Image (cartoon, rainbow, N blue to C red):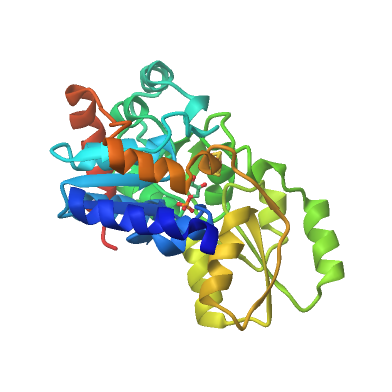
Amino acid sequence: WPVFAPLIDAINRLKTERGAVILAHNYMTPEIFNCVGDITGDSLKLAQVAAEAEEDVIVQAGVHFMAETAKILSPEKTVLIPDMKAGCSLASSITGADVRAIKAAYPDLPIVTYVNTSAEVKAYSDICCTSSNAVQVVEAAAAQWGVDTVILIPDQYLARNVAAQTDIKILTWKGACEVHEEFTPGDIDELRAAHPDAVILTHPECPPDVMARADFAGSTGAMAAYVKERAPKKAILITECSMSDNVAVENPGVQFVRPCNLCPHMKRITLKGIYEALRDMQHEVHVDPEIADLARASLQAMLDLPR
Ligand code: 13P
Ligand code: SF4
C-alpha cells in the first residue's frame, strides 16, 4: 500500500519514541491491522493485553469503550484514542442510572454486563463478559449467586443467543449492535443457495434466527481461529467488513464471499488519526477514579475466570 507507507513509517517511529503499544481490534482496516497494530484481536484479548501491557502509552485502535477498558485496567498509563467520537450503539443504549434501576428491581440477581458499555455501566454491574466468554460468565455468575436466573445486558440478541446455549434463565435489555442486527435470515438463505460450498460464520450479536442458520458462531477472535484451523475452501463471515479483509490476509488459500455491514464508529479510526494521536499525545481517555475502581472489579471478576 504505497500511499500509506509514509504514515506507517511515521507511526512506527513515533511508537518507539513514545514507548507506546497499539491495540488494534479485528474491525480495523487492513493497513491499521497489519501495518501498525502491535496486538490485534477481539475484545477479550485486547482487554487481557491492556491489563498486562508494559508500555507507558496505549493507543486504542478501536472504539471508546475499548479505550476506557484499557484505562480502567491500567490506570497509571496514558491511554489515547484517535477519535473520541468512536462510539458504539450498544454502549449508548444503556446508562449507569439504568443499571442501578435494574439492580433495585432485582437485588438478588447478578448483573452480567457485556464489555461494549461505558465505565459507569460496568461499575454498577457484578461481572463483565465478552462475546467469547458470555456463556461461561453467565453460568459462573449463576453458580456463585446460587440462582437460576441472570441479567445479561445490554445486547438483547447476545442474551437470547446465550440463553439458547445454557439452562440458566436470562433477563436482558433492549440494546443491539447496529452492524449485526441488520443481517436477516433471508440474507443467509440467499448466500447458502448461491454458495452451497461455503462455511457461514456469524457473530453472536446477530439475531438468533440468523445465528441458527450459520455453521459457526463466535467472537471475532473465534471466527478468525475457526478459519485458520479448518482452512475451508470458501468462507462467509457475517459481521463487520474489515474482518474478512484481515482474515483473508492470514489465509490466502481461503476464498471469501464478502457480505458485510460497516461499523461507522470503528471506521472513525484511521492511520492519520493514529499518527496525530501519537504526534500530539492527543485524545487522552480519563475515567473517574471511583467509577474506575468499581468497573475494574467487574472486569477483573471476568479476567479471573479460568481461561
Ligand atoms: P468481539 O471482538 O469481542 O467479538 O466484539 C465484536 C464487536 O462488535 C466489538 O465492537
Ligand atoms: Fe458497537 Fe457493533 Fe460497532 Fe462493535 S460493531 S462497535 S458492537 S456498533
